[in-house]
Image (cartoon, rainbow, N blue to C red; front, side, top):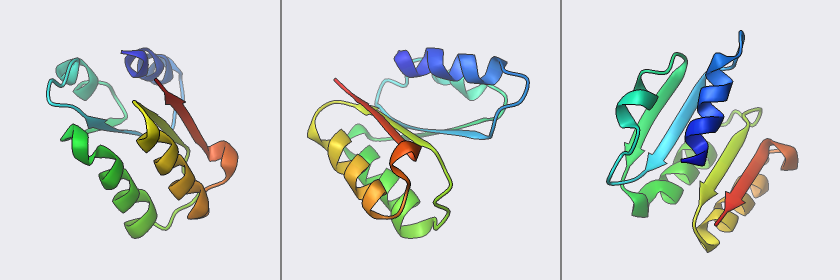
Length: 100
């Protein structure tokens, strides 16, 4: 739920960058509401695949290291993805994270 309030705040701003949410869930809470937000692309993947999918998309395939990435999740995979993104050339401040 915290990501919902962050996204709602961002899309209410007059100008915001394009947003993409890679959502690892089977329940897809707020799916319809999030999918309707202007400027947000919502990609839902299986929870056990979300960190691997993020690494694939933003390390292996996409070479644009100017993106800002916010990682939110449970446990050690959050830190592992953070470290992998930073090791791939994303600036430290461009990779934010919250682990619960």
